[in-house]
Length: 575
Image (tube, rainbow, N blue to C red):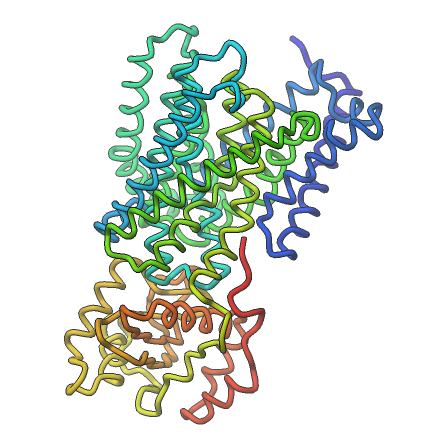
């Protein structure tokens, strides 16, 4: 039985320590510069790999990261585990119900955002395979299908983080983008799983492609139906009879690895099984938010940095950087995705500005694009030049999506809208009488409605329908029920304080004590976004919520807001 020697084990531990330290340090630096952490993590790998360290001190590079022997095999196994766990967490972010709740608009955006870039990518790769970096000996059809999928995929985790940092995640526009991204992610990974099956693999390397496709679709259907039902039944028992959070974490990781092994046996990559189980687990109503956050932090801060840093060890980015190919991939990828999503949004009746914002928001590729490219490189579908171009596409689109959305929506160009500008003494309720979500909404709606212009019953129905699409509970005990109404004119805001707390399904699992109702016009896209952004920035700190809960009157509430201005720049943070 072959094992690592004492020297190899020492070098492996040293290499992992150096990789993790560099990836975390540069990841934190990227966050401080308001960029995705993955930018810093991949940069760390480039610095430690053949691109920089290999060029400056080849001896040290070969000592830490040799290309032959047992050490690279052990490192490869660990990075495979890392990517499997990362896709488990990514799957947990997928909420299939958001697609149906958003209805026709989300379906139109996601469908157009898949079909249009897929067609552009397929035709480009089919007629110019050598220009686009097809690996010698690769099948032309498989390469064209891969490139089409790579241009169609989106990055739900990156998009969600961009919207959260802009304080727009709970807005109507944010929920629409998330719903479309969920559909794109699910379909894109299924298609790519089938493409990997076309390359070959299986139990003995000879499972017919038809069988592989059937098994892939069948396994996906099984996990998302029966598997989802079983997870929902088993979780309460695990939570009741095992230690927290170890019981649920052990269950989640164990079953994810089993599902990964199943898809690997079928002949597609193991990450697809983990991704599907992540969806089933994340859909369970019994999965506590604290457990979800614990697993996400464990993977995101330990395993994910190791994987993304390892990417820079595989390729010399300077040697394989092809400027023409990078420019072509950037132009074709950005144009296909942005125009496709814009067309779908316009077809569904979205305004011009918001349609473009949706297009650029959906263009964020992030880690998913990198993972696709790496798998295609390992499978012999693309060469190193194309892989480098895809990494550049992922990084550039992730870094620019937030700022482009901000510019298109006109956020931050003029005087910032403050939610308190639309608050009146009669719409400040302290304390709220109701202890239930709908009852609180009814109280706040009645406070802003004057039956001559706004009918309270109709407004309450609109707000409650919006609440059913996606809970408006934020963190730190804040909730922002909202609605966009035709012909409203000036926005209206109501504030309610609840000492006992109300269940608004907040992000951190806590009760909401500060409930802010926001009503805006369907004709004013900027008002809702800026008001929600202002609320997010104002109550970003828990101590700010504590301060407003201690006041008794409307005047004291305004004074507290004035002497404690919002933290951070106005809608400029992005991930």
